[in-house]
Image (cartoon, rainbow, N blue to C red):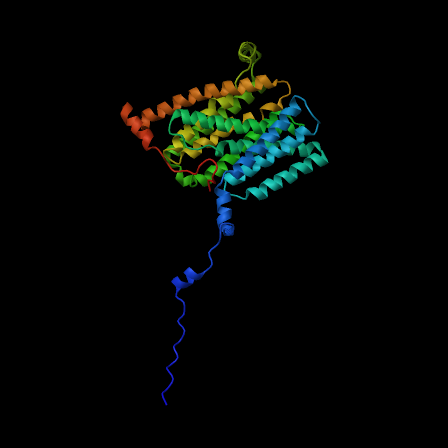
Length: 361
């Protein structure tokens, strides 16, 4: 009797065969991680953010006209502050949803409780957040025109923060408010730059000299204004005030000295330097001297809105001129010789940094 043929063991499907037989997702069943990545890479979050900021600014402008209910100013301030907080957290690689929601909740609590101290604290927070965001939202600039564009971006963000700061209607001592917000914005900018610039050991001799010069200019500007206010002789004060009065009567405004002399030139030179070396971030930190005064510029009720706009504009224009001179002197001392060599240096300048809408850290 013939024996039965031996049983053959079933062949296990190979990895390639399993891959071929595995059901493939259809057009409507895209994997969830891929969908999240596509949403993150789209322009939808930026579009929503811009729409929220514009809605908040519209409420603040309507309250200044005034048009509509009285609550528009508070609603606009809370909306803009929450949006700026979201943007700052996203720029710093944090958790924008968490911090944006927290800022929104704190703003709503301020409006509901309606205490003077809470409104003042919210105004300080809005001023500081917009001032820091104005500096860190800049990108490296190869040429002077690119640096001028970055100054406009920083000043524009600070101006939006100024509207939100005024919308909280705080009860303040003007001089103290200006000093506190300036110091907080400077501290925030230097805290960020400390991480971006690889700490103090990333400064180098050039960076140390730059930081010392900026600190001296800042200290001299603030100390001179304070000493003049307290101990200046009547004749000297009157002569200086005559120049301010002439400018306000004939030009409509007088530029703020700290913005003109330090803040805007620091942004011009810093963004120009960042395209070539990381020490440029330390220079950009002094751009807080421009964004902070703009963010608190609407706190003086004795100055009209038109004069505030002209003062910021004059400071920006004069500061750009000073910044241009500083950049040219820097290139003359450290850059290549000759027009062709300078153009080649501009084309080669391209130190990598994340885009404006990406996280720095």
